[in-house]
Length: 117
Picture 1 (cartoon, rainbow, N blue to C red):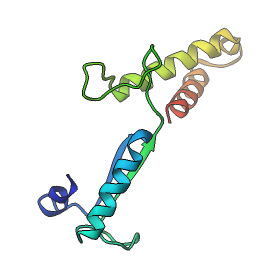
Picture 2 (picture 1 turned 90 degrees about the vertical axis):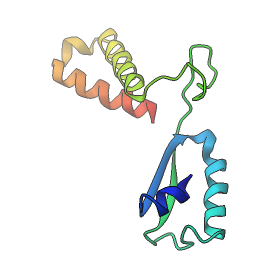
Picture 3 (picture 1 turned 90 degrees about the horizontal axis):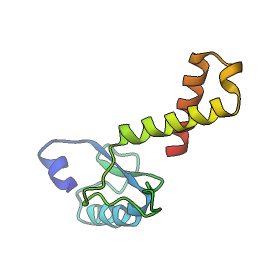
Picture 4 (picture 1 turned 180 degrees about the horizontal axis):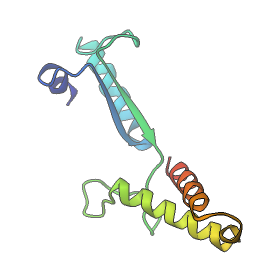
């Protein structure tokens, strides 16, 4: 996986962004890479790989989305939906009367995107 990126693409640093359910997998892969000498054991070195986990994405049935199934949702669509739902909730709670459209948009974006994190 990352050996190709290090050797062929000459990557200096790699960040893998997946849901938190993959944390253990990446921990094991990176430890193996360090033992094999492909990655530096010094966390401050330039040849390194890390995992950035985010919360699980659940479907309407409250089950995890599987990336290998046809049920995958694009991140941009997920963020748009989160922002839209937040804006609707803000309007339902009377903020549409108090705030400008720009304030509603900015607040809905901040809350919606933060909720996805």
